[in-house]
Image (cartoon, rainbow, N blue to C red):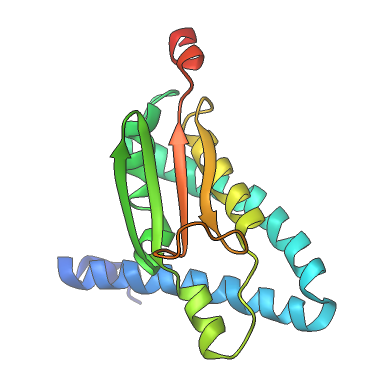
Length: 179
């Protein structure tokens, strides 16, 4: 009997990267499927209530695993967030970008798979701002509890039509001094 996990070790680097991207897309698809089932059964308001709670919980485990993977300490700052968010499933499932603006880290989902799929299916856009606030705040705080998150643009409050959503991460000066 062979160890099925050995099959990963036989993949090339390019195949592993492709597998990571596929797994990330699968996670987004699974999230979308369960949400659509709940939306059809109980309506968008109830689906959003449950979705928001899910995204209060899930990012903690992803962030902690990435933090451990990189060997980051308790307060790795925005640099640690940038390092971990670059491997966040959303980056590899969507078209995303990240850049520095003064002392802030800006993260954007430039093209969102979820909204594109809903558009193709003739569905209303997912009102994802409350979920995104939960997801990115929980993820960031699991990396460094001093990080604050501001939504720059996210449906239904789109300020920047050039992206699916945009988020600003900062550490207030008083929190930096306290560390």
